[in-house]
Picture 1 (cartoon, rainbow, N blue to C red):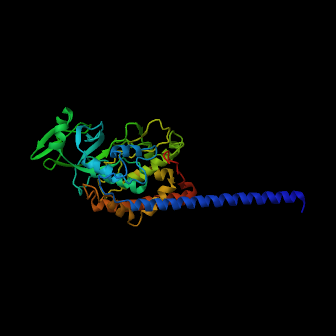
Picture 2: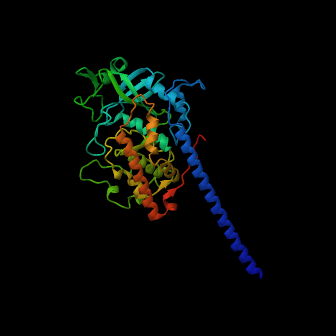
Picture 3: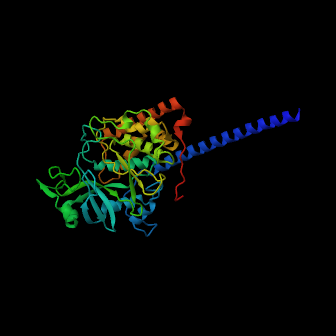
Length: 409
């Protein structure tokens, strides 16, 4: 064999060797990643039930200090949280030392300061569990139980981007009124034998107060994020116009996602994939009201999309608002880790997992059975949507690896 032929043959063999090695490494990495996803799923399932226990035997820190240290750019709480039960117990039992009107917004809420200086947001009960909110998917009052359920769904999906939420009963006469600011106190009233308040917000009306059962009011408390992590508000690229007869661009432009991909911070980094994760999350809970979202400030698109204000959810179990999934079916991409987790949760696992996760809560049962059944049905719709994308574009395009190294690891 001539020297030139030998050189060509060696070059061909070298190329084959390189491609084979790359292929094997890629498959090995993918397989390892899938195995880690499966291990993470089993860890989550093993820790679903959280006992609200005040003991913190292994640390001298307060529950508030522990929860504050959990927060990093890509998660609000870590995967393994042996102290979670103690933090949530503190949220539902610690003495209220101050009560004020909630931060600005459209819905009724109160800002409470708990013993130790921790802020929480209190959302009162407005509906019975079996009440069905009719009309637009974003209609009705905030649902306090939806905040509790959404937090546990965030745990189950492995996102860990929702602030901690737990149910709480408060005595308005003995716990709130003695420590209330004049602004909040001025909105208290009696309706029959029930103590009520209507607060201060865009839609708050004296004619539409939230009322306790006597003096005892059921609600949810959401843990305030640490002040060292200031928030930045963003307009959601798939937000609605909320104006009858006026469509947002994404509602009529089939190429809308292509335009979004050219716009910061969606042109690089994890933010677009976070938007798609959030669309999946919102579709499952029936939240069509995420017109804005928050991230941490000065993050240049690297921090997570924080799953705040999930109370416009679980209003109508019979309504599956497909438009919530627009980021998914218009962009046709999804994180491999999210795809794997969704597949682990099918065949009734999601309903069972969420029911178990919420069973410890003081206001349990948090959701009615029709809402739990709706979750499993909506999951099937999500899986079918992704399959349509992979059939059209192929799994290599649709399933995207995005396993960012977290700053605390």
